[in-house]
Length: 302
Image 1 (cartoon, rainbow, N blue to C red):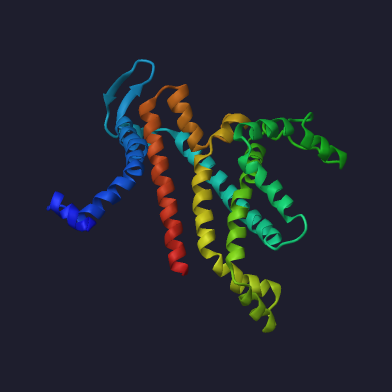
Image 2 (cartoon, rainbow, N blue to C red; image 1 turned 45 degrees about the vertical axis):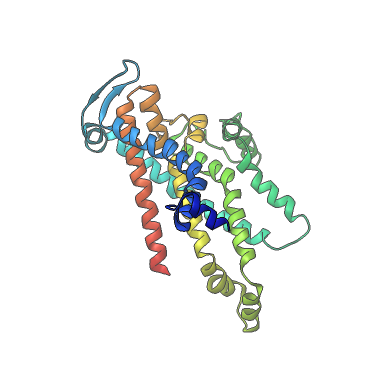
């Protein structure tokens, strides 16, 4: 009766068309947000990257690909920043994933107090990034820092963590891993709990050791989760800003100057919006290529 009434009121409105209109009505808020907050800014950044635009003068001049040429071929600082970003990602991603998997394996089985341990390791994830960085900045000071005072008790003369280029990078990587490892731990725990226990029981009946069970059964079944964790951790490592801003400001001697912070410097300290936009587009391409490579490697392994 209802479909017949619709046909009488609007004979051109078929059931298929009505379902399509309802579908578009339901997705329209999400679609509008995607166009306004993603596609629109992306188009704007692409346009800005082709201009020489200074925030102070508010004058924009079309320069084509000059900003990209400056970054890739004329500015040696750019490749130093890329090197720092690669070093940061290369240290953070494997360390984060390995520690997250180890914690997940330890905390995936029920035992007394397991919820407390999970909460302790996950708490830094929901802690303010700014507060986290400020606290660690004080802990990692020179002789007055708590970390060096603890090391002094066992006869180790700790370095000035945030004032020496090599140690500063190590410090920001480790403190970032400690903050974010809880998120990956939870993802791994969920994946481990989804693996049927029958597989492990059958393997033990066949005489498989714990390591054989992990390497032949658990690790392959964690493949999809590992891919997701690898992709989001890699993207997050290239987007890191607040941690660098609060702890080192890109120093010392530009030793922790990574791409996201370099974009901020160019755009909001030196007011060169065109060049900063070109750097942002380069970072977008780099992250996209790394993601596609990871996906391709995963497909090849499967």
